[in-house]
Length: 451
Image (cartoon, rainbow, N blue to C red; front, top):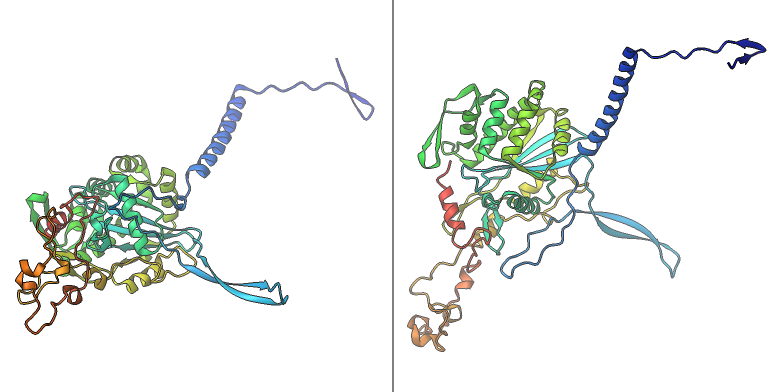
């Protein structure tokens, strides 16, 4: 047996104390918890994170009749750089422009709701979050807003999605981003079923209905019957609220304001402590009825950030414009200056202001330039160069005047008037190539009857 020597004295060896089963169990639990905590921290740091900023994507080869999607134009910042002139040795200041940078912790997410058939996005909202200031804001885009289609014509923004699932939302996100002057960081598409179930999961939402609402359209399976006043709306009644528009003086504009106020109340209820016990139910609804390019980690990240925000201070906006009837279809072209003002006030993710040069807005004047030319008055001679034979396979007559006496010069020798000089605009508006020939205008005229 070995003895330990300590300052010249012999000490008996100490017996090793064996751990009891209970102590081993406690240490095992502690170690297990430590491991789990480390794993959980690693998973949290790996998964719970914001979405990555969009990277430039090389466009695929375009069809001859298809125009490329518009790109977002970043604003620029002027920088003064001091350089040394090689010949004189003197310092010279040069001004240069560099692309603006994206601010850290600033996100804009596209949130859309489809109509009953899931074809059009009649609710289009951009949700803004600033993690540094804890500011939240909502921007509603009217469903009749004018945007370019894929063939050089115009269309309503609610038809861009066209029931296209993830591809349709990516297309809408890109086209809307080009219009607003900044890239969107993700999208969420919610159908009516998801909306109803979400409201029911939080046991309804208290809301002050602004007026009596009644509308009945069996063809759309839409029945609305709400009384004015403060009340708790279940999923079905909440859906009636956000879809109602026929009884408003400004119809779609007033509806977007009501939608914004209801979403404010719903967000506060969803992010409340009492709703945290229903995370599984929310996840089930999301996975079944929601289309998004955000990961679960992205959504948890945003939920965590939103819980720090004051929704009572949330700012809401609706993009302004004016109604315009173009080729028999009702549109809502936007005011570019007003749009730039809204973006810079509450949505601009860059460290430089968005300008009129960096947005892609179809203004009222520009929208009206797409009006098809009407047939000239009988007494006004047509321009022979603009004539198109009825049968495209046949060549036009060499002498139009011989075939159509209306094209002859007037008796005083004045040449025929050119309709292009009096009726500016595109001679023809192509149909949207994603919807198929003849479908776009028909679908939009049908939506005019929808609430």
